Image (cartoon, rainbow, N blue to C red; front, top):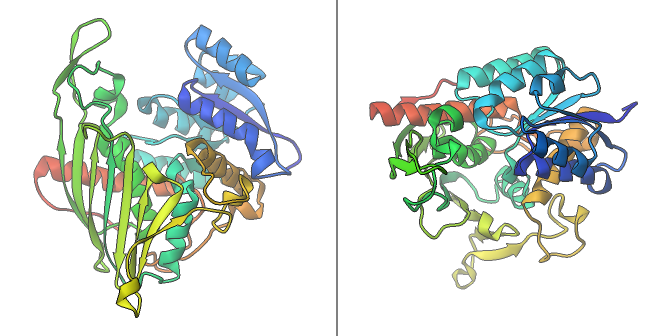
Length: 391
């Protein structure tokens, strides 16, 4: 790269702060020869904008996101705004020739996701989507276990993303309770992470049947007004693959007592693994033994032998966190833009027909995941199985 890549961040909330911290750290941790210029930031709220701009030393600050996209100093647009704005913002950024890193969901339906994917492809623009938990070194190991057939023939899986953010009826109404702003609800907000892992490991399922529910139908807003809840609180689905792999997923924001239970278990003819993001620095692995006395799940601590961990710490057991995963994700993405080895595809997981997967999720992945999410919603509405097109 002949100049520093100019980044522009839309939004000034938590995730935008996390991306700013990550891009400040990428050169030191992931890409020693790459650095970025904090060209512009955006928030419609003047005080928030001024604070965010000063905190991360951006060159310019805009209240209108269109001004940021049109700024010639911005080469890469990062979208951290509410979900209902993502598609319009991403589309304009790609039309203006900007690389894109967008938080999920990038759109509210698969057709819009496909528009973004094809637009990025036509304009030869690099793109990424914030499936951040996929950057966990434990997820890289899970991919390797399947690719190397350590688990044998894959039989089944079960995945969960359970939180209790809206378990109590006295929790105030939030914009995520409005389907027009936040999308389906838990089905895409939480379901994206579980379905994203499954699409990464096994590709697009052939069919699904699902159920969505809203447990608390109305809530009081900050001013005491009763507001309807039009998004779902919980959802579950069965996913089936043409090669015989099948499993269940469950997502909920009313799972009382659960803070961040993100769980994926995959079972095969020779072994299994369990990834639990409440213990995100370990993976439980079962491998069949000739001596039955030695069989059982064993806890493997993530350490320097696992991809990307050693960039942060030379010894196992110290642990990485969510913000570290964002550094890994954004570092791989910058490597892809720059054409370094960090951006190259890795592995050939079972069920993907020899197709390699990238270290990060992109708009093509988001399109495939959204197809599954849409199918689950359609199945819930029609109370029927839904076949997923393989194109």
